[in-house]
Length: 378
Image: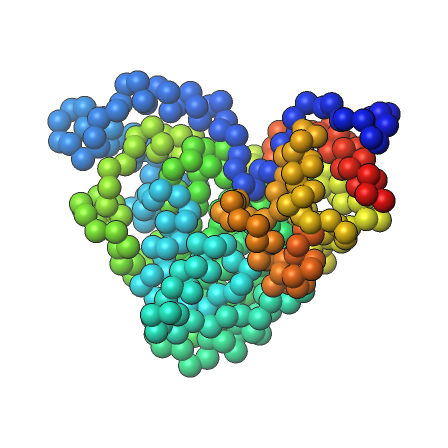
């Protein structure tokens, strides 16, 4: 531990504990992208030799993503990221069942559909942050055909896992489909925890891949209508020219995630637990009583605003967040924690999220710095 006085500035190397916001691109991903950018840059829709080579890169990546998601390559639609994939999965629905703890790219779509007269049913949010399957059963009764239940496999702010297998059985018996946002789950928790949806969204940059590409995997031939109109790319469901370099990076990222990703993340649970134990006397764990992914800890520190504590930690060399990265630039507290515990606890929430390069030394430094900052106000 650092022996410096509490009122002295902390001097440590940067510690990155915001892996749920984005992950650093892996060197293998960067190398693949560099090679493709230099050698295979043509438009993949062109029929000449250069275009065919670019197309081959994209189809190889599509095959890799399909294998990762245990689906046919034909059922993989490349998008600009998981946000677009979630939009594409939900906009066609006659009715949507979801909750206020979902990612903004699902919540905002549901709100948009509701304003336009579509049926939207909001599931109750228990304090544990884990949806009750009986609430799902009750909420889907009597819904029109082609309704969609939209849930995240792993919550982006608390790490809580949802009971997707039980939910999927209820939804299918009722004649609907289940859309799973697997962005924070894929490659981090066992595949059985997220490969249960009729459609699944993925984002490459959460897997140490590049930003700007994701996928919607239609595992049961779900009916999807385009959100954008234009060319015939991606079977006319997602028009626009694909970047072979991004696709290549995505392909490498999912191969790496499939090769030991779950084991690498499982090994982080001890570090996550050590972090929470160090702050047990000054914080409350949000979602701590529910099954969670091993790399996420969301803590509320009484007497602090989450954004102020996150800013203080940043100045001291520790990168964390006080809410979803997609809500950056606002002063809104965590909508997830607010739905679980109310506004006061949400306002004091900070998320620590670990990744496969997080070390014990990183956690020790983060604990030391955080405790010293907290003591300044005591």
